[in-house]
Amino acid sequence: MTLKKLSLVGSGTTVSATASSDEDQAVSEPTVSAIDSTPSLSDGAYALISVDVTEKGNVSSYLRDQMKIYHQDRFMFAFYNDLTDKVDAGAGYTQWVDGVLVETPIASQDGPLEDLSFDITIVPTEVGYSQSLKGMMYGERSVNMVEQWKTLSTETTVFDGLWKLDSRSSEADQWEDFVEMKLIGGGHFIFFQSMVVDDEPVKHFGFGSFRVDEAGHVVETGITSSFEGPGGEEFKLNMQLIDDNHMSQSFELNGATVTQTYIRI
Image 1 (cartoon, rainbow, N blue to C red):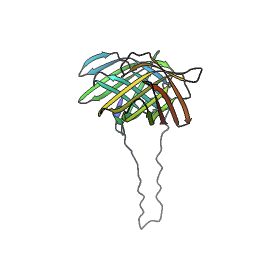
Image 2 (image 1 turned 135 degrees about the horizontal axis):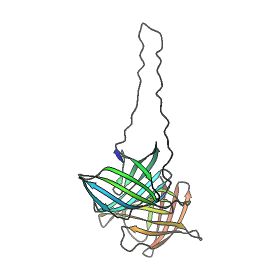
Image 3 (image 1 turned 180 degrees about the vertical axis):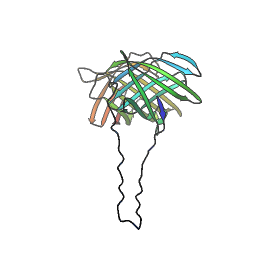
Image 4 (image 1 turned 90 degrees about the vertical axis):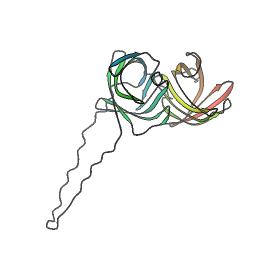
């Protein structure tokens, strides 16, 4: 993987004429080669199997609960990063360019992002895929990572997509500056959120399975999150598509109703 700053490259041509000639100078149009946008990986939910981290020639192997979802040129990942001792999450756009996956993050657990992109070479495997990440920066540290991923599901629902929180009303809390992004796809969900509680910034993430039961209720089963408590707990949500680009969900929290609306990204 290559990390690069996004730049806009333009080409301009100046056409000049001399007083001694009335002939127009011919200017050839620049040619753009066709880009192969064929994906090498199916949309769906993926779970990290293992990651090998190389730093200054020393290799360390990690097992951690991490999920990533790709859906219709969008991505999201989330996990608790032992290297930084904090929540690590991100979301953004994807594009396939001649077999290389280009990820352009637009948000992380710390807020909006811009002017970043990642060129990732994806190698399909029997159980999912592998990828190599070179030159990842954690403060002053630079590490290389080799990650192995397995496919969880490629199922779809009508709620699939990348969603950004638009409004939130709650009878259960008085959290301030609440921000959330959520991606649904591959029969799973991921979210990350930030808020201010008692004048202190707080960040959370969570992911798990996602299904719609026979009664039309959404059932989310947690796998991993930064909240206290064991995984595997089921949550029923009343989720509705307002239109193609807006969604609402409501649920019970500590005996009170929370209602959230989202905009599709």
